[in-house]
Image 1 (tube, chains in turn green, cyan):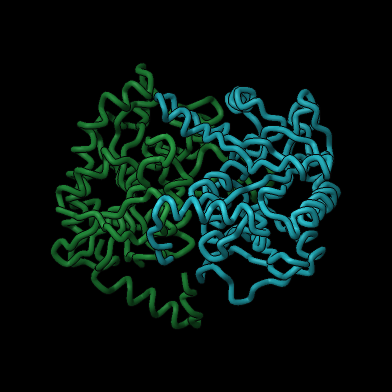
Image 2 (cartoon, chains in turn brown, green):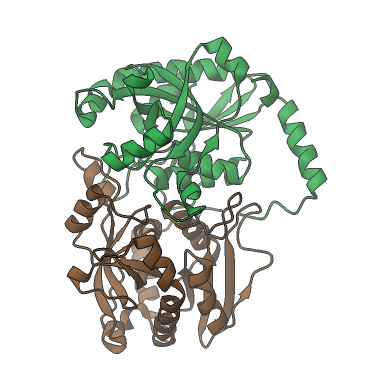
Length: 265
Length: 265
């Protein structure tokens, strides 16, 4: 964790401009659940890093490999050390994103995963969305400015050409640490104007923003939040089928990114 | 972020046992707000680390110094880079704890800060509590085992002698990312049997637990959650006075720790 070293403002701007115009080389795909990650890992024949880019003791897993001109890294926060379930949610996602950015210096982050969708906003089961922006819905801090910090609104990396080529749906993503939705969450999700709801996106965006790594969010809908079925039941029922749709979209995104710079997305 | 290297199970146990019997040397004090941190920084005449133990770009601040036999580090997640308010809440707390544990290898973590208290459970303004255990109240995942992961119950380091000597109050701590409390949070806080409520404790515990660093939680009550005044108003009104009480208790804890091993706390 050595400091990057100080750069002058002009040098930093030049570096950013160069990065935007150079072909994307290293991508970091952050995925919260093993079920969501493995189809992508298998598709690109990625291998698990036995020496790990991470400190000893953490459950985080990195899969990596070369595909065409890209170094692809899939990181997954792993199974909880005491309970054995996937380490979902904002804390694990932020930690593994932080450690991965430090170790791998990616040019682009893709946060891929499943999400709940709102049918009132046009979402259906199996739809794959590219989030236009992300925010939190369960960090209510009713003190001026702290309230905005709690919401944590951030823009996804602008990708007009990618969007046109792939014909994915576009919507705002709202993030919270609960799978269900209580009335206070619902009010915040409405205020966020969200079409999709997940448990990691805004946390990945928070860390990516600190280090100025452009990030896109690919989210496939497993359950309809404003529908009639209980979320947990519908989520588990559709998880396997929807991860296949997610893998297809992530593959399309990677194919599109290959050989392009950030400006060309 | 080099791996610690692999140790055999027996060697690991021997190392843990040795650590428990050796005098505590390096302590890491994680504090979320500058107003809470500065009285402790001033009391122990700590200086800000200009080269930082952290990567370039993060707002996190480390103050450090020697006091008697102890290397004292106070880390504070700093001001939000775009909004300028203290980086409160679980994500920043987990990130700064992770980076500090990696950089400083502390023998003990103290998470100190202000909290809301429940008068029905015996809390009053200005009371200082040592948390017996910590859990989350805003991570509802109604799927078997994931529900337990969401709650994330963890024990604080056992400190019977410290408790007897300092005569602090003891209670369970519940953590969430909102300053206020919605009915769903309240139900979870009741299920957690909590006397005090904060925005960082269980996140610090999560990271500390991964790396097996014993942790204690010193929390001073700024507002009564089940009282009549609005939380934000009462919190801001009492913040300065209560941070003085917090500093006194942290000082007493540090004085008590000095020269002792974990077993003697």
